Length: 197
Image 1: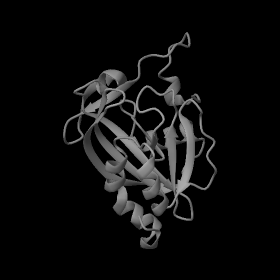
Image 2 (image 1 turned 45 degrees about the vertical axis):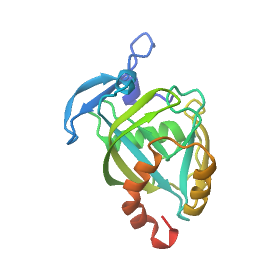
Image 3 (image 1 turned 90 degrees about the horizontal axis):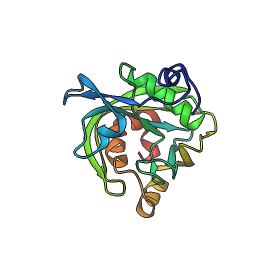
Image 4 (image 1 turned 180 degrees about the vertical axis):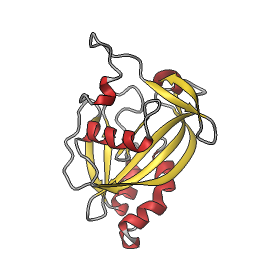
């Protein structure tokens, strides 16, 4: 993972990683505490702050990522451009931009808020659960991805029709359709009705 001021703050001085902490929230999204990342995902899960990013090219195609096979949660499945968790006290917008750069090697040329969605999605394959208050972001990307192989197995730019076909025969993250549906109004505003989103 590239070292940034945020990631550097989460490594100890001898170079070993410290536990990644997540921000716990109530049903209104108000911060109520913190929890270690894995413990927040063990059933029944702890409601925590998250973000999901949807980036489109200038042709209105959505950038998808296939999660790396080495990830402990939902490995090998396809999902939206980027998703993750802000560090405690980190603004969701800043976290979304940071993780997009860390995972995909690109920075959005435009990124805007697209609302929030709360969900509870078990992941049968890992036995973990996503109890998330998710901040949604929609934007544009102009550069070709240069993904970190420890995070991303593959990428693809797809039209709405191509996504529908892909979703029928490939595994997607448990949360993908929930966050996509919640972000659709902002996506349509960005891409235009003719794009089919």
